Amino acid sequence: MMRVWLLGLCLLLGACGLRTPVPQGVPQLSVQLPLTLLIQRQQAGERQDWLLVLQAEGPSLRWSLLDPLGVPLARQLLTAGEWHNDGLLPPNPEARELFAALLFALSTDAALAQHYPAGTWQLGAAGRRLNPQWSINYRAPLEFSLSDGAVRYRVRALTAGEP
Image (cartoon, helix red, strand yellow):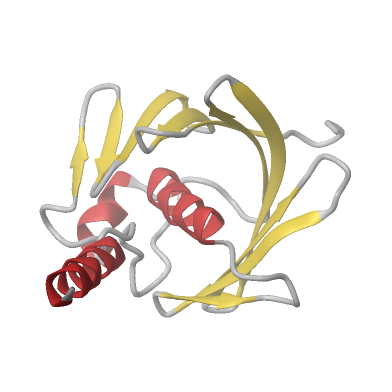
C-alpha cells in the first residue's frame, strides 16, 4: 500500500514539473497591444471557436478568453512570471498553458534568448518549439497553429470590423 501512495506522489510531482515556462518579465512582442485573436480549438474531431483579448496593463498582461457569445471562459493576469486569477472565474489550467504558449509564439526572436531559459525552446525554419510539448507553425506572423500533441489550436488575428 505504501508503494502505491509513493508512486502516486511521484506521478503528481512529475505532472507539476511539466508546465509551460513563463518568462519573469514581459518579453518584446511582435505585435502591438491590445490584440484580439480568433482561436479554433480542435481535439478528437471536435472544434470550438474562442476569442482572446490580450492587453498590456503596466508591467502585466491581461488575458481574457471568451466564447463566441462573449461569455468569459478564463481571465488571467500575468505579473512577474506568475498567473493570477482576474475576476470570479474558477482557475482554468488549460487556458494558462495556452496563454503561456501564445506568449512564446508572439514574442520576437531576440526576446526568446533574453526571457526563456536555454534548452527550453528551439527555432526552426517553419516555426518554434517550446518544451515540454508545444509546437508552433507559422503561416504568417499573426496566423499560426499551436499543438501540444493532444490538442491543436489554429490562431489568427482579427482585424477591425471583423466579428
